[in-house]
Amino acid sequence: MLRLEQVSKLYRKRQEEIAALQATDLEIPDGDYVAIIGPSGSGKTTLLSLLGGMLAPTAGKMWIDDESVYDLPIVDRARLRQKKIGFVFQTFNLVPYMTARENVQVPLFLAGTKPAAQQVRATELLESVGLADRMDHKPCELSTGQQQRVALARTLANDPDLILADEPTGNLDPESRQMVLSYFEKFNQDGKTIVMVTHDIAAARTAQRLMQLSEGVLVEVPYKPILKSA
Image (cartoon, rainbow, N blue to C red):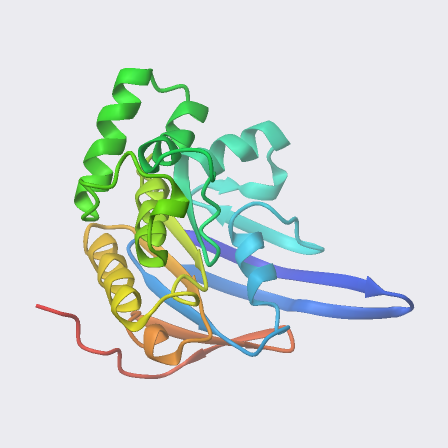
């Protein structure tokens, strides 16, 4: 369970105070799949950073399960992120001089996993996203869609409960976009909680819940999700 209690985030620009997120209560149960839409500058990335334990709120509390994230010491907060949260970025954030397998091994290395186990886990994950024949290729040798699939495999390396995705389809062609959304659907069916920030309305409508963020105000939008694939 992810829970916000009167969480707000304010910035100061010169003499002006800007509310990136106004006081917000939010509950996201385990296994939920939430899409958040909104115009550029509406605070979506700020909200995602808050949910990921990377940006402390101005006020309020955020809970993951029974832990108040921003009351934890920095070291413990980092450990919580490493154990429970996976991130998917629009720009992939792959290390350019590492192979696909080595990129997937990075979070495993940081978690102290033994090298042999790192290789086994990375191999399994890359096979699961259809990249069995691209494991030793570097990012520059992969298509944009293949790079995103490497990033997805890396996200799953430590088997996180919560996946936070920031515009995950923004740089993809239609075929790769659909493939990524199908993987999100599978991850959700496997019990992962997903929060996706997106400008892509069609992508957002594959989620179970739709929310809109505008001028720091987050509201849920009633709608019928697109039917899941069989």
